[in-house]
Image 1 (cartoon, rainbow, N blue to C red):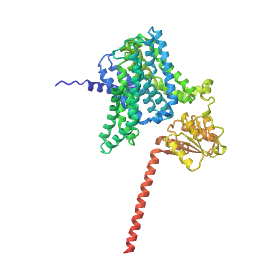
Image 2: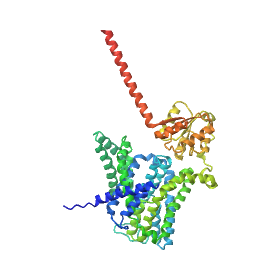
Image 3: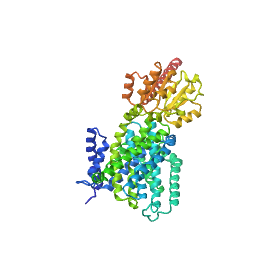
Length: 577
Protein backbone atom coordinates (compact mmCIF):
# COMPACT_ATOMS: atom_id res chain seq x y z
CA UNK A 1 0.00 0.00 0.00
CA UNK A 2 1.37 3.38 -1.03
CA UNK A 3 0.98 6.23 1.37
CA UNK A 4 1.21 9.95 0.74
CA UNK A 5 3.70 11.10 3.35
CA UNK A 6 4.16 14.70 2.18
CA UNK A 7 2.84 15.99 5.51
CA UNK A 8 5.27 13.85 7.51
CA UNK A 9 8.14 14.75 5.18
CA UNK A 10 7.34 18.46 5.43
CA UNK A 11 7.13 18.37 9.22
CA UNK A 12 10.30 16.31 9.59
CA UNK A 13 12.31 18.49 7.23
CA UNK A 14 10.95 21.76 8.64
CA UNK A 15 11.50 20.91 12.30
CA UNK A 16 14.84 19.21 11.67
CA UNK A 17 16.40 22.00 9.62
CA UNK A 18 14.88 24.66 11.89
CA UNK A 19 16.60 22.99 14.84
CA UNK A 20 19.96 22.84 13.04
CA UNK A 21 19.93 26.39 11.68
CA UNK A 22 18.35 27.79 14.83
CA UNK A 23 21.11 26.22 16.93
CA UNK A 24 23.81 27.57 14.63
CA UNK A 25 22.26 31.04 14.71
CA UNK A 26 22.17 31.00 18.51
CA UNK A 27 25.83 29.89 18.67
CA UNK A 28 26.92 32.94 16.65
CA UNK A 29 24.75 35.24 18.84
CA UNK A 30 21.98 35.70 16.25
CA UNK A 31 18.27 35.28 17.01
CA UNK A 32 17.04 31.72 16.49
CA UNK A 33 14.31 32.91 14.13
CA UNK A 34 17.02 33.88 11.63
CA UNK A 35 17.91 30.19 11.52
CA UNK A 36 14.25 29.25 11.00
CA UNK A 37 14.06 31.62 8.01
CA UNK A 38 17.25 30.11 6.54
CA UNK A 39 15.77 26.63 6.98
CA UNK A 40 12.75 27.73 4.95
CA UNK A 41 14.95 29.10 2.17
CA UNK A 42 16.81 25.77 1.98
CA UNK A 43 13.51 23.87 1.80
CA UNK A 44 11.96 26.23 -0.75
CA UNK A 45 11.64 25.75 -4.51
CA UNK A 46 14.30 28.35 -5.32
CA UNK A 47 17.23 26.38 -3.88
CA UNK A 48 18.54 22.95 -4.97
CA UNK A 49 17.83 19.78 -3.03
CA UNK A 50 14.71 18.61 -1.19
CA UNK A 51 11.63 20.77 -1.77
CA UNK A 52 8.97 20.68 0.94
CA UNK A 53 5.25 21.02 0.25
CA UNK A 54 4.75 24.80 0.38
CA UNK A 55 0.94 24.57 0.57
CA UNK A 56 1.09 22.24 3.56
CA UNK A 57 3.72 24.38 5.26
CA UNK A 58 1.57 27.49 4.77
CA UNK A 59 -1.46 25.81 6.36
CA UNK A 60 0.60 24.54 9.29
CA UNK A 61 2.01 28.03 9.73
CA UNK A 62 -1.54 29.41 9.77
CA UNK A 63 -2.28 27.09 12.70
CA UNK A 64 0.74 28.55 14.45
CA UNK A 65 -0.55 32.07 13.90
CA UNK A 66 -3.95 31.05 15.30
CA UNK A 67 -2.48 29.48 18.44
CA UNK A 68 -0.16 32.41 19.01
CA UNK A 69 -2.96 34.97 18.65
CA UNK A 70 -5.11 32.82 20.92
CA UNK A 71 -2.39 32.99 23.56
CA UNK A 72 -2.26 36.77 23.20
CA UNK A 73 -6.00 36.98 23.71
CA UNK A 74 -5.68 34.95 26.91
CA UNK A 75 -3.40 37.68 28.30
CA UNK A 76 -4.97 40.73 26.64
CA UNK A 77 -8.41 41.69 27.91
CA UNK A 78 -10.88 44.08 26.33
CA UNK A 79 -10.15 46.46 29.20
CA UNK A 80 -6.47 46.44 28.20
CA UNK A 81 -7.42 47.28 24.62
CA UNK A 82 -9.69 50.11 25.72
CA UNK A 83 -6.97 51.52 27.97
CA UNK A 84 -4.64 52.07 25.00
CA UNK A 85 -7.29 53.05 22.44
CA UNK A 86 -6.37 56.75 22.51
CA UNK A 87 -2.87 55.99 21.26
CA UNK A 88 -3.40 52.71 19.38
CA UNK A 89 -6.30 53.88 17.20
CA UNK A 90 -5.01 57.24 15.92
CA UNK A 91 -1.41 56.01 15.91
CA UNK A 92 -2.13 52.92 13.82
CA UNK A 93 -4.33 54.81 11.34
CA UNK A 94 -1.82 57.62 10.82
CA UNK A 95 1.14 55.22 10.61
CA UNK A 96 -0.66 53.11 7.98
CA UNK A 97 -1.27 56.30 6.01
CA UNK A 98 2.39 57.40 6.14
CA UNK A 99 3.74 53.96 5.21
CA UNK A 100 1.23 53.66 2.35
CA UNK A 101 2.35 57.01 0.92
CA UNK A 102 6.00 55.94 1.13
CA UNK A 103 5.21 52.66 -0.64
CA UNK A 104 3.21 54.56 -3.24
CA UNK A 105 6.25 56.73 -3.92
CA UNK A 106 8.47 53.68 -4.50
CA UNK A 107 5.86 52.15 -6.82
CA UNK A 108 5.57 55.31 -8.92
CA UNK A 109 9.38 55.44 -9.09
CA UNK A 110 9.29 51.89 -10.50
CA UNK A 111 6.72 52.96 -13.12
CA UNK A 112 3.72 51.17 -11.63
CA UNK A 113 0.19 52.52 -11.67
CA UNK A 114 -1.41 54.50 -8.85
CA UNK A 115 -3.60 51.53 -7.87
CA UNK A 116 -0.58 49.22 -7.76
CA UNK A 117 1.30 51.73 -5.63
CA UNK A 118 -1.61 52.06 -3.19
CA UNK A 119 -1.83 48.30 -2.63
CA UNK A 120 1.95 47.98 -2.46
CA UNK A 121 2.10 50.70 0.19
CA UNK A 122 -0.57 48.95 2.24
CA UNK A 123 1.48 45.73 2.08
CA UNK A 124 4.41 47.57 3.66
CA UNK A 125 2.30 49.29 6.32
CA UNK A 126 1.19 46.38 8.50
CA UNK A 127 3.57 44.62 10.88
CA UNK A 128 3.60 40.93 11.80
CA UNK A 129 1.86 40.18 15.08
CA UNK A 130 3.71 36.86 15.29
CA UNK A 131 7.13 38.54 15.18
CA UNK A 132 6.08 41.23 17.65
CA UNK A 133 4.73 38.76 20.19
CA UNK A 134 7.86 36.63 20.01
CA UNK A 135 10.02 39.73 20.60
CA UNK A 136 7.92 40.97 23.53
CA UNK A 137 7.75 37.54 25.16
CA UNK A 138 11.53 37.07 24.94
CA UNK A 139 11.99 40.38 26.77
CA UNK A 140 9.23 39.79 29.32
CA UNK A 141 7.48 42.96 28.11
CA UNK A 142 4.19 41.51 26.84
CA UNK A 143 2.22 42.63 29.90
CA UNK A 144 4.04 45.94 30.35
CA UNK A 145 2.44 49.23 29.35
CA UNK A 146 4.66 49.47 26.26
CA UNK A 147 3.76 45.89 25.34
CA UNK A 148 0.03 46.55 25.64
CA UNK A 149 0.33 49.66 23.46
CA UNK A 150 2.29 47.76 20.78
CA UNK A 151 -0.15 44.83 20.75
CA UNK A 152 -3.17 47.16 20.73
CA UNK A 153 -1.59 49.09 17.85
CA UNK A 154 -1.18 45.89 15.83
CA UNK A 155 -4.73 44.74 16.63
CA UNK A 156 -5.99 47.99 15.09
CA UNK A 157 -3.73 47.38 12.07
CA UNK A 158 -5.12 43.86 11.72
CA UNK A 159 -8.71 45.13 11.83
CA UNK A 160 -7.85 47.70 9.16
CA UNK A 161 -6.30 45.01 6.94
CA UNK A 162 -9.41 42.80 7.31
CA UNK A 163 -11.42 45.71 5.95
CA UNK A 164 -8.92 46.24 3.09
CA UNK A 165 -8.96 42.56 2.09
CA UNK A 166 -12.75 42.56 1.82
CA UNK A 167 -13.04 45.90 0.01
CA UNK A 168 -10.17 45.40 -2.45
CA UNK A 169 -12.09 43.14 -4.90
CA UNK A 170 -14.87 45.75 -5.12
CA UNK A 171 -12.34 48.56 -5.62
CA UNK A 172 -10.13 46.63 -8.04
CA UNK A 173 -11.85 47.89 -11.19
CA UNK A 174 -11.56 51.52 -10.07
CA UNK A 175 -7.87 51.07 -9.30
CA UNK A 176 -7.00 49.61 -12.69
CA UNK A 177 -7.25 45.90 -11.96
CA UNK A 178 -9.72 43.14 -12.68
CA UNK A 179 -13.13 42.97 -11.02
CA UNK A 180 -13.86 39.37 -9.97
CA UNK A 181 -17.32 37.92 -10.32
CA UNK A 182 -19.42 38.76 -7.35
CA UNK A 183 -17.16 41.63 -6.36
CA UNK A 184 -20.22 43.89 -5.99
CA UNK A 185 -20.30 47.59 -5.32
CA UNK A 186 -18.11 49.39 -2.85
CA UNK A 187 -20.95 50.42 -0.54
CA UNK A 188 -22.43 46.94 -0.47
CA UNK A 189 -19.04 45.43 0.35
CA UNK A 190 -18.47 48.02 3.07
CA UNK A 191 -21.87 47.48 4.67
CA UNK A 192 -21.52 43.69 4.54
CA UNK A 193 -18.03 43.80 6.03
CA UNK A 194 -18.95 46.15 8.86
CA UNK A 195 -22.07 44.11 9.55
CA UNK A 196 -20.19 40.81 9.68
CA UNK A 197 -17.43 42.15 11.92
CA UNK A 198 -19.95 43.82 14.23
CA UNK A 199 -22.02 40.65 14.56
CA UNK A 200 -18.91 38.55 15.21
CA UNK A 201 -17.53 40.87 17.89
CA UNK A 202 -20.96 41.20 19.52
CA UNK A 203 -21.44 37.44 19.65
CA UNK A 204 -17.97 36.90 21.11
CA UNK A 205 -18.32 39.61 23.75
CA UNK A 206 -21.93 38.92 24.72
CA UNK A 207 -22.39 35.17 24.19
CA UNK A 208 -18.84 33.89 23.99
CA UNK A 209 -17.75 35.45 27.29
CA UNK A 210 -20.32 33.30 29.07
CA UNK A 211 -20.46 30.12 26.98
CA UNK A 212 -16.78 29.29 26.43
CA UNK A 213 -15.55 29.85 30.01
CA UNK A 214 -18.46 27.70 31.20
CA UNK A 215 -17.52 24.97 28.70
CA UNK A 216 -13.88 25.08 29.81
CA UNK A 217 -14.94 24.66 33.44
CA UNK A 218 -17.16 21.68 32.61
CA UNK A 219 -14.29 19.93 30.83
CA UNK A 220 -11.94 20.71 33.72
CA UNK A 221 -14.31 18.89 36.08
CA UNK A 222 -13.50 15.61 34.31
CA UNK A 223 -9.94 15.85 35.72
CA UNK A 224 -8.63 14.78 32.33
CA UNK A 225 -5.61 16.76 31.22
CA UNK A 226 -5.83 15.63 27.61
CA UNK A 227 -9.51 16.60 27.39
CA UNK A 228 -8.73 20.02 28.83
CA UNK A 229 -5.92 20.57 26.33
CA UNK A 230 -8.16 19.32 23.52
CA UNK A 231 -10.89 21.75 24.58
CA UNK A 232 -8.47 24.68 24.53
CA UNK A 233 -7.07 23.81 21.09
CA UNK A 234 -10.53 23.05 19.67
CA UNK A 235 -11.83 26.39 20.93
CA UNK A 236 -8.88 28.32 19.49
CA UNK A 237 -8.89 26.72 16.04
CA UNK A 238 -12.66 26.17 15.85
CA UNK A 239 -13.54 29.79 16.63
CA UNK A 240 -10.83 31.04 14.27
CA UNK A 241 -12.11 28.86 11.42
CA UNK A 242 -15.76 29.66 12.11
CA UNK A 243 -15.08 33.39 12.24
CA UNK A 244 -13.35 33.26 8.85
CA UNK A 245 -16.05 31.18 7.16
CA UNK A 246 -19.14 32.81 8.68
CA UNK A 247 -18.06 36.42 9.23
CA UNK A 248 -15.13 37.01 6.87
CA UNK A 249 -12.77 37.74 9.77
CA UNK A 250 -9.17 36.55 9.49
CA UNK A 251 -8.05 33.36 11.27
CA UNK A 252 -5.65 35.35 13.42
CA UNK A 253 -8.24 37.89 14.55
CA UNK A 254 -10.80 35.17 15.27
CA UNK A 255 -8.30 33.29 17.43
CA UNK A 256 -7.41 36.51 19.24
CA UNK A 257 -11.02 37.10 20.24
CA UNK A 258 -11.34 33.44 21.23
CA UNK A 259 -8.52 33.97 23.70
CA UNK A 260 -10.12 37.17 24.97
CA UNK A 261 -13.41 35.48 25.83
CA UNK A 262 -11.70 32.46 27.41
CA UNK A 263 -9.74 34.90 29.55
CA UNK A 264 -12.95 35.43 31.53
CA UNK A 265 -12.56 31.90 32.87
CA UNK A 266 -10.71 31.28 36.13
CA UNK A 267 -8.84 28.59 34.20
CA UNK A 268 -7.33 30.98 31.67
CA UNK A 269 -3.83 30.65 33.14
CA UNK A 270 -3.98 26.87 32.85
CA UNK A 271 -5.30 27.19 29.29
CA UNK A 272 -2.35 29.40 28.37
CA UNK A 273 0.10 26.94 29.90
CA UNK A 274 -1.41 23.92 28.14
CA UNK A 275 -1.37 25.56 24.70
CA UNK A 276 2.13 27.03 24.99
CA UNK A 277 4.11 24.02 23.62
CA UNK A 278 1.93 23.89 20.51
CA UNK A 279 2.25 27.66 20.05
CA UNK A 280 6.04 27.38 20.10
CA UNK A 281 6.14 24.43 17.69
CA UNK A 282 3.80 25.87 15.09
CA UNK A 283 5.23 29.40 15.30
CA UNK A 284 8.52 27.85 14.10
CA UNK A 285 6.64 26.56 11.05
CA UNK A 286 5.44 30.10 10.36
CA UNK A 287 9.00 31.36 9.97
CA UNK A 288 9.99 28.30 7.92
CA UNK A 289 7.05 28.79 5.55
CA UNK A 290 7.99 32.47 5.06
CA UNK A 291 11.51 31.41 4.14
CA UNK A 292 10.16 28.91 1.60
CA UNK A 293 8.45 31.69 -0.34
CA UNK A 294 11.63 33.73 -0.75
CA UNK A 295 13.65 33.73 -3.97
CA UNK A 296 17.22 34.81 -3.13
CA UNK A 297 17.77 35.83 -6.76
CA UNK A 298 15.80 39.04 -6.17
CA UNK A 299 18.69 40.31 -4.02
CA UNK A 300 20.97 40.19 -7.06
CA UNK A 301 18.48 41.19 -9.75
CA UNK A 302 16.82 44.13 -7.92
CA UNK A 303 19.16 45.25 -5.12
CA UNK A 304 18.15 48.94 -5.15
CA UNK A 305 14.45 48.11 -5.08
CA UNK A 306 14.97 45.71 -2.17
CA UNK A 307 16.97 48.33 -0.25
CA UNK A 308 14.22 50.91 -0.82
CA UNK A 309 11.55 48.52 0.48
CA UNK A 310 13.62 47.58 3.54
CA UNK A 311 14.29 51.27 4.21
CA UNK A 312 10.56 52.03 4.27
CA UNK A 313 9.79 49.08 6.55
CA UNK A 314 12.59 49.58 9.05
CA UNK A 315 13.12 53.35 9.00
CA UNK A 316 10.13 55.00 7.31
CA UNK A 317 7.49 53.28 9.44
CA UNK A 318 9.61 53.49 12.58
CA UNK A 319 10.28 57.22 12.33
CA UNK A 320 6.61 57.91 11.60
CA UNK A 321 5.49 55.85 14.61
CA UNK A 322 8.21 57.41 16.80
CA UNK A 323 7.05 60.95 16.08
CA UNK A 324 3.37 60.06 16.40
CA UNK A 325 3.84 58.52 19.85
CA UNK A 326 5.83 61.51 21.07
CA UNK A 327 3.23 63.90 19.67
CA UNK A 328 0.61 62.00 21.65
CA UNK A 329 2.74 62.85 24.73
CA UNK A 330 4.02 59.40 25.60
CA UNK A 331 7.56 58.82 26.93
CA UNK A 332 10.62 58.41 24.72
CA UNK A 333 11.00 54.75 25.70
CA UNK A 334 7.41 54.02 24.61
CA UNK A 335 8.02 55.73 21.27
CA UNK A 336 11.17 53.67 20.66
CA UNK A 337 9.49 50.41 21.69
CA UNK A 338 6.52 50.97 19.36
CA UNK A 339 8.92 51.95 16.55
CA UNK A 340 10.92 48.75 16.95
CA UNK A 341 7.69 46.72 17.11
CA UNK A 342 6.53 48.04 13.74
CA UNK A 343 9.87 47.71 11.92
CA UNK A 344 8.89 44.51 10.09
CA UNK A 345 6.07 43.05 8.00
CA UNK A 346 4.51 39.60 7.98
CA UNK A 347 1.40 37.51 7.48
CA UNK A 348 -1.11 40.17 6.37
CA UNK A 349 1.41 41.56 3.89
CA UNK A 350 1.73 38.12 2.25
CA UNK A 351 -2.04 37.74 1.99
CA UNK A 352 -2.56 41.24 0.62
CA UNK A 353 0.21 41.10 -2.00
CA UNK A 354 -1.06 37.71 -3.23
CA UNK A 355 -4.58 39.15 -3.58
CA UNK A 356 -3.21 42.20 -5.40
CA UNK A 357 -1.34 40.01 -7.90
CA UNK A 358 -4.40 37.79 -8.47
CA UNK A 359 -6.56 40.85 -9.19
CA UNK A 360 -4.04 42.18 -11.71
CA UNK A 361 -3.33 45.24 -9.58
CA UNK A 362 0.28 44.34 -8.80
CA UNK A 363 3.00 42.96 -11.10
CA UNK A 364 4.50 39.57 -10.05
CA UNK A 365 7.75 41.26 -9.02
CA UNK A 366 5.85 43.04 -6.23
CA UNK A 367 5.45 39.73 -4.40
CA UNK A 368 9.19 39.09 -4.53
CA UNK A 369 9.93 42.57 -3.17
CA UNK A 370 7.42 42.20 -0.32
CA UNK A 371 8.85 38.79 0.61
CA UNK A 372 12.41 40.13 0.49
CA UNK A 373 11.39 43.04 2.71
CA UNK A 374 9.68 40.65 5.12
CA UNK A 375 12.63 38.27 5.37
CA UNK A 376 15.19 41.00 5.94
CA UNK A 377 13.05 43.04 8.33
CA UNK A 378 12.11 39.98 10.42
CA UNK A 379 15.78 38.98 10.63
CA UNK A 380 16.82 42.51 11.65
CA UNK A 381 13.94 43.18 14.05
CA UNK A 382 15.59 41.67 17.18
CA UNK A 383 18.50 44.08 16.70
CA UNK A 384 16.02 46.97 16.58
CA UNK A 385 14.80 45.99 20.05
CA UNK A 386 18.37 45.68 21.34
CA UNK A 387 19.09 49.18 20.06
CA UNK A 388 16.31 50.80 22.11
CA UNK A 389 18.48 51.42 25.18
CA UNK A 390 21.54 52.85 23.39
CA UNK A 391 19.41 54.99 21.06
CA UNK A 392 17.41 56.35 24.00
CA UNK A 393 20.56 57.29 25.90
CA UNK A 394 22.09 58.92 22.81
CA UNK A 395 18.96 60.95 22.04
CA UNK A 396 18.66 62.12 25.63
CA UNK A 397 22.33 63.14 25.65
CA UNK A 398 22.71 64.69 22.19
CA UNK A 399 19.31 65.58 20.80
CA UNK A 400 17.69 68.70 22.18
CA UNK A 401 14.64 68.09 19.97
CA UNK A 402 14.12 64.61 21.42
CA UNK A 403 14.40 65.98 24.96
CA UNK A 404 11.89 68.72 24.21
CA UNK A 405 9.46 66.30 22.61
CA UNK A 406 9.90 63.80 25.43
CA UNK A 407 9.46 66.25 28.29
CA UNK A 408 7.61 69.25 26.87
CA UNK A 409 4.83 71.00 28.77
CA UNK A 410 2.39 68.23 29.64
CA UNK A 411 -0.42 68.78 32.15
CA UNK A 412 -0.48 65.09 33.06
CA UNK A 413 3.27 65.06 33.80
CA UNK A 414 2.80 67.53 36.64
CA UNK A 415 0.63 67.30 39.74
CA UNK A 416 -2.24 69.82 39.76
CA UNK A 417 -1.71 72.84 42.00
CA UNK A 418 -5.00 72.01 43.71
CA UNK A 419 -3.53 68.97 45.51
CA UNK A 420 -3.31 69.87 49.22
CA UNK A 421 0.26 70.02 50.54
CA UNK A 422 -0.59 67.80 53.53
CA UNK A 423 -1.22 64.97 51.06
CA UNK A 424 2.31 65.40 49.68
CA UNK A 425 4.26 64.81 52.87
CA UNK A 426 4.74 61.35 54.34
CA UNK A 427 2.74 59.90 51.44
CA UNK A 428 3.29 56.66 49.54
CA UNK A 429 4.50 56.93 45.93
CA UNK A 430 2.77 54.04 44.15
CA UNK A 431 4.34 53.10 40.80
CA UNK A 432 1.88 51.20 38.61
CA UNK A 433 -1.91 51.06 38.82
CA UNK A 434 -2.62 47.63 37.39
CA UNK A 435 -4.26 44.69 39.16
CA UNK A 436 -1.73 44.75 42.02
CA UNK A 437 -1.47 48.54 42.24
CA UNK A 438 -5.25 49.01 42.44
CA UNK A 439 -5.49 46.65 45.42
CA UNK A 440 -2.62 48.38 47.22
CA UNK A 441 -4.26 51.76 46.59
CA UNK A 442 -7.58 50.50 47.96
CA UNK A 443 -5.89 49.30 51.17
CA UNK A 444 -4.00 52.58 51.59
CA UNK A 445 -7.22 54.53 51.16
CA UNK A 446 -9.07 52.30 53.63
CA UNK A 447 -6.42 53.07 56.27
CA UNK A 448 -6.39 56.80 55.55
CA UNK A 449 -2.85 56.84 54.08
CA UNK A 450 -2.21 59.42 51.38
CA UNK A 451 -0.59 58.28 48.13
CA UNK A 452 0.44 59.53 44.69
CA UNK A 453 0.19 57.24 41.66
CA UNK A 454 2.87 57.20 38.94
CA UNK A 455 1.58 55.47 35.79
CA UNK A 456 2.68 55.24 32.13
CA UNK A 457 -0.88 55.01 30.85
CA UNK A 458 -2.21 58.50 30.33
CA UNK A 459 -5.83 57.35 30.22
CA UNK A 460 -5.51 55.83 33.70
CA UNK A 461 -3.95 59.06 35.01
CA UNK A 462 -6.80 61.10 33.58
CA UNK A 463 -9.37 58.82 35.21
CA UNK A 464 -7.61 58.91 38.58
CA UNK A 465 -7.52 62.70 38.53
CA UNK A 466 -11.24 62.79 37.77
CA UNK A 467 -11.72 60.67 40.89
CA UNK A 468 -9.66 63.12 42.94
CA UNK A 469 -6.59 60.86 43.27
CA UNK A 470 -3.18 62.56 42.75
CA UNK A 471 -1.48 60.94 39.76
CA UNK A 472 1.45 61.67 37.44
CA UNK A 473 1.92 60.34 33.89
CA UNK A 474 5.38 59.12 32.98
CA UNK A 475 8.15 56.59 33.53
CA UNK A 476 9.18 56.45 37.21
CA UNK A 477 12.76 55.67 36.10
CA UNK A 478 13.07 59.34 35.11
CA UNK A 479 14.02 61.78 37.92
CA UNK A 480 11.57 64.49 36.87
CA UNK A 481 8.63 62.08 37.18
CA UNK A 482 9.46 61.06 40.74
CA UNK A 483 10.15 64.71 41.60
CA UNK A 484 6.62 65.55 40.47
CA UNK A 485 5.33 62.79 42.76
CA UNK A 486 7.15 64.59 45.64
CA UNK A 487 9.24 61.51 46.41
CA UNK A 488 11.65 63.70 48.41
CA UNK A 489 9.00 64.00 51.15
CA UNK A 490 7.48 60.52 50.74
CA UNK A 491 7.51 57.83 53.40
CA UNK A 492 7.65 54.90 50.97
CA UNK A 493 8.11 53.98 47.32
CA UNK A 494 5.96 51.01 46.29
CA UNK A 495 6.83 49.56 42.86
CA UNK A 496 3.81 47.50 41.75
CA UNK A 497 4.38 47.58 37.99
CA UNK A 498 4.95 44.26 36.17
CA UNK A 499 7.76 45.89 34.18
CA UNK A 500 10.82 45.28 36.38
CA UNK A 501 13.40 46.46 33.85
CA UNK A 502 13.73 49.93 35.43
CA UNK A 503 13.36 48.95 39.11
CA UNK A 504 16.98 49.70 40.03
CA UNK A 505 16.83 53.13 38.41
CA UNK A 506 13.62 53.96 40.31
CA UNK A 507 15.14 52.94 43.64
CA UNK A 508 18.40 54.78 42.96
CA UNK A 509 16.60 58.02 42.04
CA UNK A 510 14.24 57.78 45.01
CA UNK A 511 17.10 57.23 47.50
CA UNK A 512 19.14 60.02 45.97
CA UNK A 513 16.24 62.43 46.53
CA UNK A 514 15.18 60.87 49.83
CA UNK A 515 17.83 58.71 51.58
CA UNK A 516 15.38 57.62 54.31
CA UNK A 517 12.63 56.41 52.02
CA UNK A 518 11.32 52.86 52.45
CA UNK A 519 11.23 50.86 49.17
CA UNK A 520 8.88 47.97 48.49
CA UNK A 521 9.34 46.08 45.22
CA UNK A 522 7.26 43.54 43.30
CA UNK A 523 9.40 41.01 41.43
CA UNK A 524 8.84 37.92 39.25
CA UNK A 525 11.85 35.62 39.62
CA UNK A 526 14.11 34.25 42.34
CA UNK A 527 17.22 35.53 40.55
CA UNK A 528 15.94 39.11 40.37
CA UNK A 529 14.75 38.97 43.98
CA UNK A 530 18.10 37.70 45.25
CA UNK A 531 20.02 40.32 43.26
CA UNK A 532 17.87 43.14 44.61
CA UNK A 533 18.25 41.88 48.18
CA UNK A 534 22.05 41.86 47.78
CA UNK A 535 21.83 45.45 46.54
CA UNK A 536 19.75 46.35 49.63
CA UNK A 537 16.82 47.37 47.48
CA UNK A 538 14.40 47.27 50.41
CA UNK A 539 11.55 44.85 50.92
CA UNK A 540 11.17 42.49 47.93
CA UNK A 541 7.95 40.56 47.31
CA UNK A 542 7.59 37.71 44.83
CA UNK A 543 4.09 36.59 43.88
CA UNK A 544 4.61 32.83 44.18
CA UNK A 545 6.39 33.15 47.54
CA UNK A 546 3.71 35.38 49.06
CA UNK A 547 0.98 33.04 47.81
CA UNK A 548 2.77 30.05 49.35
CA UNK A 549 3.21 31.90 52.65
CA UNK A 550 -0.45 32.87 52.75
CA UNK A 551 -1.61 29.33 52.04
CA UNK A 552 0.83 27.90 54.61
CA UNK A 553 -0.37 30.31 57.30
CA UNK A 554 -3.96 29.35 56.62
CA UNK A 555 -3.23 25.61 56.73
CA UNK A 556 -1.19 25.89 59.94
CA UNK A 557 -3.82 28.03 61.64
CA UNK A 558 -6.52 25.61 60.54
CA UNK A 559 -4.64 22.54 61.81
CA UNK A 560 -3.64 24.25 65.05
CA UNK A 561 -7.21 25.34 65.60
CA UNK A 562 -8.53 21.84 65.01
CA UNK A 563 -5.83 20.41 67.28
CA UNK A 564 -6.72 22.87 70.04
CA UNK A 565 -10.41 22.02 69.68
CA UNK A 566 -9.62 18.28 69.85
CA UNK A 567 -7.52 18.71 73.02
CA UNK A 568 -10.24 20.75 74.69
CA UNK A 569 -12.79 18.08 73.82
CA UNK A 570 -10.55 15.36 75.31
CA UNK A 571 -10.13 17.35 78.52
CA UNK A 572 -13.88 17.84 78.76
CA UNK A 573 -14.53 14.11 78.28
CA UNK A 574 -11.95 13.24 80.94
CA UNK A 575 -13.47 15.68 83.40
CA UNK A 576 -16.97 14.31 82.86
CA UNK A 577 -15.75 10.80 83.57
